[in-house]
Image (cartoon, rainbow, N blue to C red; front, side, top):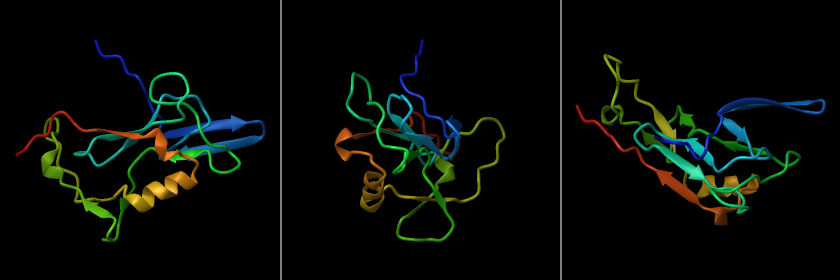
Length: 140
């Protein structure tokens, strides 16, 4: 039996007094959680960003709504070919049934500049990241 240790909402709606917050492709870092899962390219899996080191598990809340209070839960897709784009290799992903492979998509890399931006969003790099790679990768 598998039991999930962490779960991340990619889309959420919360109310704090008279303020309503909409989270699309990101999550609220001020709500209790056990690490934040960021969905990467399908062949790359997920990255688990650890929160503040309180208690056990993968960390807890961080940040402040007045500064940011949000954290990306998906790897952004990009339209233009830039040095930060990685090509999507649709041939290396297992698909159920007769699903057609998705069109060629480019994803933003989580490079040093991106991680520095996350630090400005109040994530402490010392908390760490765990890269969760897919177990099965199918080839045609």
